Length: 403
Image (cartoon, rainbow, N blue to C red; front, side, top):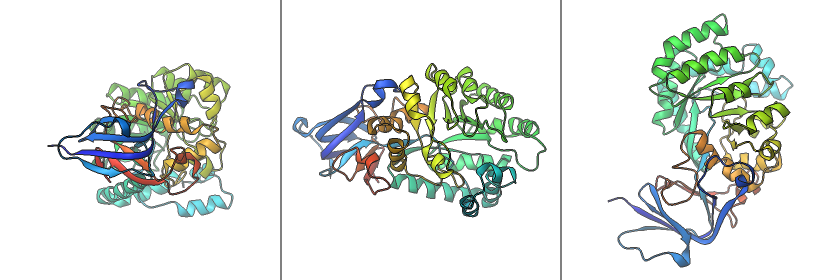
């Protein structure tokens, strides 16, 4: 028999309204809030939600959790992380703090290549330990579902080991085979020849999606198209890093290829906003990265007002966003991106779930959805964004199990 879990006497329960995904426009800010509420889980599925006065008599064995003083929101969904890496980039952080730019370090052979060397040296065991550790950090911040990318190995064995480590830690793997050009290749085209011939066939057995860093100094639009079309033909969903430093064609390419998302958008202008708003592609906003690199914030308010679908994520990685906290990202969404707490909640739950192809199963507190619940130690669910850097997390429930 599966365990039934009752989270009872909650101060508030808050969940994105409706059943559609992704949410955009006015619907992005619509949240259903219940006070003095409960969530009843049957195994890994939510059986019922409601007010305590409407709780029916429960037969059989039920594990009860006292929710007094707590608020329940859907388990947070981090749809863009780089959790599979070895080492750190604390030395790079020190150099950047002294004035060196991210692009200068990347061009000098630092940046992603620094992490590539440490990741290759870590081996498969080291990568497994790293992803498990990073997973535990995310869980402490209320993240119950996470995506993670490869892209720091950039050779066959390390890329595949990264994807296995992500999968085995319970993450959703994305093959970021086109992240940078490793030093053993003369140019991006030669590297793509290798990656598509030698890594893609096995990556498709492990990953759900493919991603590319379309940016000056990485891969241009033609190279990104070649990579993404090959990955699409092999059965992978498509995603792009785009408009982080320059507008180099990422949004038009994402729309043309019906990608799930284009992520970053710090450099996106008016035409890009209009193009994204008229498409089904989600813009994934990464304000912790913009803050960490002292870059302009993505134009979130203009994107939402234009009708674009947006999601929020941490971009957790060792070089440009060493941050695993979605609550902190929600605070940045409110203070820097000018999104309301309701818009931020939807952006890191149901819209992030849509990016991962799971909006019918995670991202809401409603009957039939996965029993993933983030419990906040706060009198109001909006503390998720309001308490800047504070310890707002009380407990999490993942698949109906208290963690």
